Image (tube, rainbow, N blue to C red; front, top):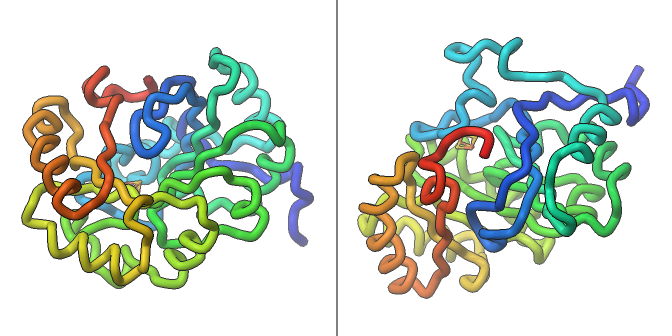
Length: 238
Ligand code: SF4
């Protein structure tokens, strides 16, 4: 028997107030809801604690909370009025039924961003409620095979929402052709594509950022900063 919506649980990695550090809304006040579990295993993943339970203890890292408890924690965060809700992961679209139930309870005026690796299509309810999808399909530098990281039907469904921005994690100009091919293959409007340096530390970000900015200019694409790394060196939960 399936659960009633309010009895569904979300697997939560962390909830905290901060600023959106990346993508189209970089700089906006935000409450982060990081959901646990991911269907990819990117080589440079900086949130392994949300899914890598061979190296992190599930019981230490994940809270399985019912929807009302998640709502209470979101409401209790010390965030300024007008803050966005940023649903991230892991891969949040792995938990769509419970996520739908949570979104249905939240203020309809709340601006909701959802960050996804683009391998799963959103349900109609999620596609309707989310204000902005930050879609990050992985390049070859993730060391994931293409058949796992690029799923055409899911990327097409996200693009068709007309509120999805691509955020590609890039290491350098050697990825020029790969990026150009990906953007054209998935017919993504260039004005909704951002390149972001792959970096987990400030020193790496400083080295890669100028090259990635130049690459974005040469491809006619946008650039995304990484404010959390600039400000806090990638420290967790800020
Ligand atoms: S998709 Fe995101 S959360 Fe999942 S392994 Fe890759 S970088 Fe990490």
